[in-house]
Image (cartoon, rainbow, N blue to C red; front, side, top):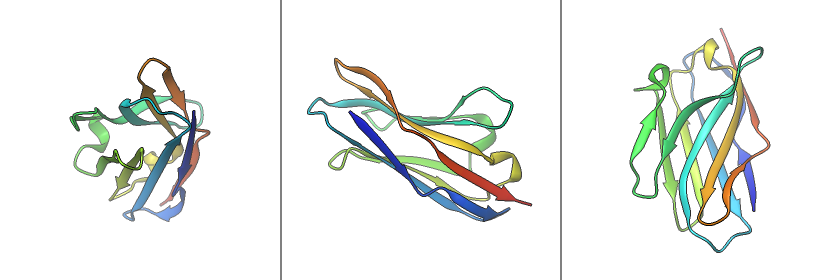
Amino acid sequence: VQLVESGGGLVQAGGSLRLACAVSGTGFSINAMGWYRQAPGKQRALVAVIGSDSNTNYEDSVKGRFTISRDNAKNTVYLQMNSLKSEDTAVYYCYALVTLLGSYWGPGTQVTVSS
């Protein structure tokens, strides 16, 4: 099972980025998909998660600014990030919970927000 992230980069405060993560290499269904982030000197923390039923959950600081979505036909999860702040700067990791196989992680993509 492989996860490939895309869409990270450098953006000014107040700007937007859209992250994408494509899951390949499995014929099993994917349950939850989500995004975590790790800022320098901090632990990896949940940003947003979406279930197979499309129920979502967000970390408090991103509510109203970030939107998670998924395309089940493409085994892809997205994170639309608006009104970005300098404190959103981190490496963002995609994860997927695959039926019968367990959890998998992407290699991470850097998001840098300049103030």
